[in-house]
Amino acid sequence: MSPRYSVGIDLGTTNSVVAYTEISGTQVPSDAPEIHLLPIPQLVGPGQVESRISLPSFLYLPRTGEVAELHLDGVDDPASGVAGEYARAQAAENPQRVVVAAKSWLCHSGVGRTEALLPWQAPAEVNKVSAKDCTRRFLQHLVAAWNGSHPGEPLCDQQVVLTVPASFDPAARELTRAAAIEAGLPETFVLLEEPQAAVYHWLATMGERWRRTLAEGDRLLVVDVGGGTTDLTLIVVDQTDGKLNLKRLAVGNHLLVGGDNMDLTLAHHVGMKMQDSGHDLDPWQNVSLWHACRAAKENLLSNTGPDSTTVSILGRGSSLIGGTISSDVSRQEVETLIADGFFPACDLSSRPQRRATSGFQDIGLPYEADPAITKQVAAFLVDHTQSSDPSSGPRTLPTHLLFNGGVFRSDVLRSRMTQTIASWCERLPVVLGGPDDLDTAVAIGAAFYGHSKAMGGMRIRGGTARSYYVGIETAGLAIPGMARPLRALCVAPRAMEEGTEIPVPSEPIGVVVGERASFRFFSSTQRPEDTVGTKLNRWSPEELVESESIELTLDSDQPTESPYVPVTFLSRVTELGMFELWCRSTSTDQQWKMEFNVREPDA
Image (cartoon, rainbow, N blue to C red; front, side):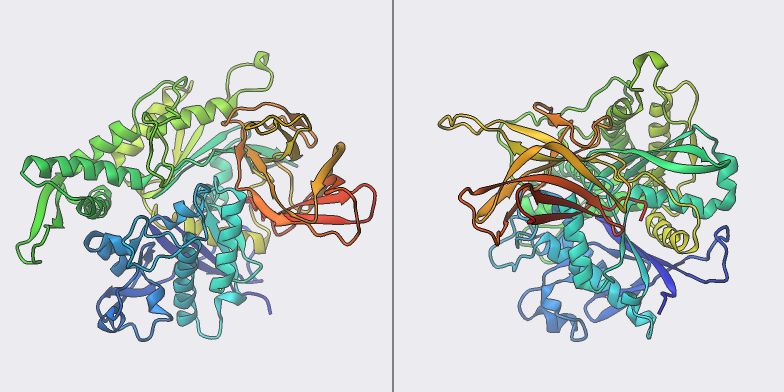
């Protein structure tokens, strides 16, 4: 049976939203579908369930015996965590029992993404969960909300589009995919990059008018500042057979800077004010203050937000009555802190600081050393707008801008970002869209993308956003205490289309069989000139980013005297967006497959 609905899911760092539209055979591609937002029932207080348009991406891990107090008898396995509004409230009151930024932890290769480590640094009595567990738990909640409101039309039978950051590495995409299927999404669901979803939201609002707004050769820069990450995407308008099309040129590297950093900046500011009033906060009070400042920032930056608000946290050893520490904070304070700290005016030649100033660092999320998003944008544009032929003329900088993320509800911050980029361009870039729907744009855009996919409508092209490489240990004499040099072989070029395969030209490579081995992989958004078979002996950390290595045993059904089997490679990107690297023996008919999810926007 064909699906009735296209369902878009924005699994956000701070909030998750579900949008949907009907897929009808009577429609034509140019029709603007009616897109709805799914009300999501969630716990807002003990025994109190209400429906909200978004599900806060917070997971509260209740104490033993607390399940009965919260009246969660109807919730599947409540001991595994309660998601939503109640969990967000508990982040300020019981921060040691609340998982936040699970999405950021999912793409952090420095720690085990499937290990039960969250909440990070929580006391031993808290039953911790993994980033993948949190992802599955949030999606289970959304699946239950859909199935409850659409009896007889379960989500597993619909066309589902789930969004991820454009900068997610293959391991994070694959973990997201696995968690989604475990939660009840159909195995045929599609991953879509969040900045692309924001563009699809704009297309949904414009209809065919977008072709009169953009012209051939225009370049659209999407600046998506989410709760945990900043995503940058560059799209060009080209023409085929007399019709305008959109093609994605480049995506930025993974930038762990976003709303969480801004909340922490505001918390530091308010904490200093509290300290000046005689309150010395302990570590967990500082965490509570961080979460309280998140709510204050969202309130003050909203369209209808007040001019000021009060931030309060519990005092140590105090009762709830009269035991709070409070400080007032104004809208102007918040806008100034964020504008100067995260959107400073800078030149196109400016570069973000790459290293922390201290040699010793806590093991935690690897936030960017430099929070200046304007500098990150400048570096991205320099890397991706210079022609390969310097004599061909100046850089082709953006002609249009599209902002996404709740922080851009603020006119001050939108204006600061626009003015800074405009100072680099010959003419003022046109800003597409407005501050409305920023909280729901990604989900709506995902649902519209699914509709376009089903109806043959407008779709952004571009193939894979990165080129992919394998790390090959060079042969040579062993030197005590020193690893052999590594070279990189490009096995998939950027913009490789789905449904295609490419033999990788190279001399035979030895692959370990019969014993467990570690296989190293790299990707790049900054080397578009590399073709399949390109060999690199040296590269900078900015050029090639190492993905999480894969440890596995390649079994052989044929005896061999050597632990190495000479192979050549075949790269394939399937229709479902899976990147397959096939290792084919040069002496027998054996072959082995390594698989990654690298789905890009053209599903």
